[in-house]
Length: 439
Image 1 (cartoon, rainbow, N blue to C red):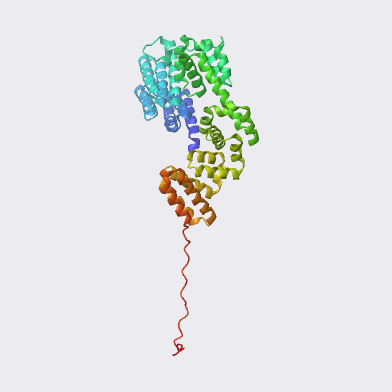
Image 2 (image 1 turned 60 degrees about the vertical axis):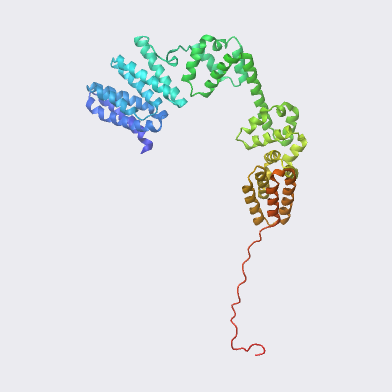
């Protein structure tokens, strides 16, 4: 039934309208009230989808009740409908009642509702709902001012003039496919009105009215930054950042590791720029984080050929991991694991690395637990011995963790024996009728 409630409410609303048009106003009330009840429930669950429908039904109910001489009930119906909704939704419904008041020549009620709607729209914490509510309030205030003249004490976003020319220029800046093209517009004569001092009030109003549109918010924020720091400084930095991001995307898009290596040869600034690993590390894409590790290994002085050998050759990767662990270098260890994630596909290698890193990070209990697990379950005594030897080497390079590392090595050197089943006692009873030897 829930899937069709909206259709049912629409039909009830239309039925109320038809009955009213036929002069059967009393009969029109029941379906209109039912439409409000259903749409109130729907709007509470999804205001973005159903709030405008609720507003329409409330307006109709207000008219029906007012025609029946029940004005106080009409006012109360609006209040009952918005109680419990978010401030933004309440603001929109209060705006609807303001329009209803205007239709019944209740100027004072209209103004009071609009002022209340302004407060609610301001209180809305959600940017999207707040922006939608402010747009609704601004439109209603525009209608009021056109009908009755200026009213005082209103916020800037509700009243400041926003010219078509300014909106057109803002839309052009938003629609530009790159920041470089946006910069070209702003640097030219055509875009100058966006940066004119007398445009700032309108820009502030637009920031409040269009807070649910991220591209618009980004351009308005850019204009504010230009006001604060100067157009050339801001746009030069913006275009440089965009170019840098494009270089990163070009590197990530290389089809082979050979092409990836060549790309870095052709773009050495990508390695030297500290923004590169920061941007890559911030990504949720495992490939991007692998590339961040490549950059960080290069920055720490690992030759380019050696880095790509780690990426491409499992033996080189294993050797690099062993060297990093043996030299008690947790940073290098993590970079090697990130640059060659295939190492972690081997559960034993992953466990050895995790155990050593835990010891070097000051987490001895976790390290001992992993060592015990390996000693109990790993049957390859050669790998256990190699691991114990590497732990002792690491202890020489990290004396502050030597006690724990030697404990781990001892655990690996003394594998826990697998319990064996005890031999069953003989089930053959002694032959009591056979004399014992010598008997």
